[in-house]
Length: 115
Image 1 (cartoon, rainbow, N blue to C red):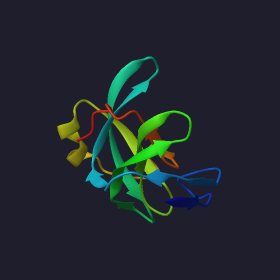
Image 2 (tube, one colour; image 1 turned 45 degrees about the vertical axis):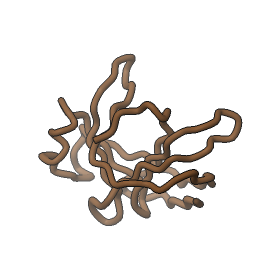
Image 3 (cartoon, rainbow, N blue to C red; image 1 turned 90 degrees about the horizontal axis):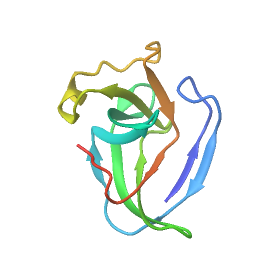
Image 4 (cartoon, rainbow, N blue to C red; image 1 turned 135 degrees about the vertical axis):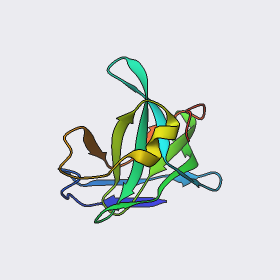
């Protein structure tokens, strides 16, 4: 899988990366990440000119072994902290929301909780 994500209103800098997929991906709406030293559920969406599908795909990370790639639209991902995975459906996605942020993609451990 090759990702070529341009700079946009969602991301200040472009990103390019290549990953070796080791299995089929699936759509997700939430991912549990370590932020500011604590585990936190985050809603996640792929970002185009608005919200879209985010995918969780098994990959082989060179030198580190099995991993999971969270990827999204042509402008990467958009994330927002939430209280639980079930709260992801209530997020109203907006580039103007200062509590939300963009990422080109995320690389997670195989044990990462998703919803």
